[in-house]
Image (cartoon, rainbow, N blue to C red; front, side, top):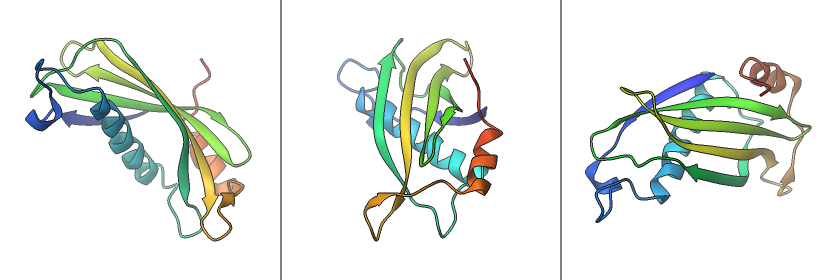
Length: 131
């Protein structure tokens, strides 16, 4: 499992004082991109697009709250993989939100999916969790 921390900025909150729902997708993206770098799955031959993204909002998050985003891989397919992400309060460890994304290896020239290389599959396998 991969972990990434963020501190909620004032501009990410709304009139009710909690994090606006759209920002959870930004937090997931931020953690996912850091995961890509840390797992070393970026290279000159691999590009990725998001095929699906969802979020279940469990609790509210607030300005200056430290959040931990955990990323794990739940499925590796031929040209795509599924990442499950969970956001926790760093201090209380309470679950704030849970999301899932399907990421597709993409050829920008043909604008079609592209098979994941064996090297990428092996790197992703280090983060796979079967729930």
